[in-house]
Image (cartoon, rainbow, N blue to C red; front, top):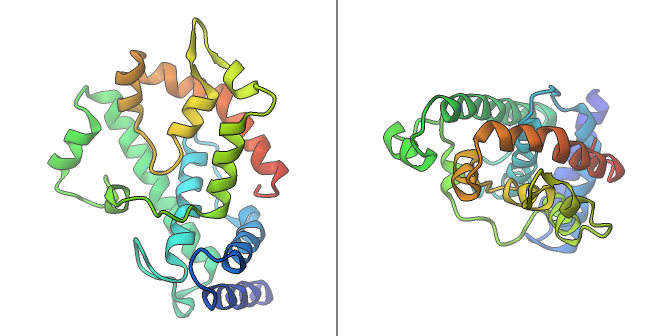
Length: 216
């Protein structure tokens, strides 16, 4: 494990020597993600994939420059430890937000202003503009969903609502994701209906893509 951590540190050092957005850095970041993906914290919660996507985005934005958070410092722990800490915080946020969305009809954007920006509920990173240089993993995922070469994502939809399909929901849930409350208002469907469909139909397809790409 020590040797593996050292390998990751060397890859991070090498990646950060290249300019942001360069093919060389993108290639190395993708290599690091592939190496770490099967070593991260796992759980079977319905929002795990969303939290994982946010973690990869955080990694790509902060491993070298610290664009939206604390820059990675190898002196405070391994890459795995750093990513797991962030992933678990995002899972906690999703858990808290899901409970609040189901318990109240107050829109998420209102709760954000009321909350006073407490990090336990709303991560200030979510309010920052998206990085114009998309991380390679999310970029690949977005291209896959938009292309939908066999039409499977578009063809998998809530009964009687072909406009609410896996392609639409996966793209809307990519960081910076649209909240379930906002999706509920947009489509006129309940949060449980949308999140249950996403969990049962969209996430298995998302997971299959991630497995084929060697991310899981």
